[in-house]
Image (tube, rainbow, N blue to C red; front, side, top):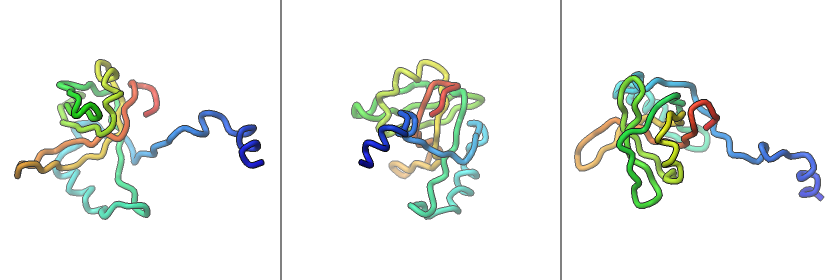
Length: 130
């Protein structure tokens, strides 16, 4: 009975995943000081969602697939910022054009080297809704 009712009132758009973000950021606003400031909101979890920002009208550069599932590269749009996109290799074709991205600014430490990077949660063509 519940499934029949839901089928009659829900639209396909009601069943799509929605990611809420904390606002827009331009790439040049993302720096080590911002990441440090955002870190003061930790720990993140169910009651305290990770801070997620929207970067509009950026272009992917030097984008590579990693292990067939992930993307790694940089966004260009006023300046250049490295990114990692776990589980989003199916969006590689979007990177040839301008995109809007939902990102978590963070510091990546690997082999004792620290680097500012954006962890991408979603990507869409510029002007559509990621």
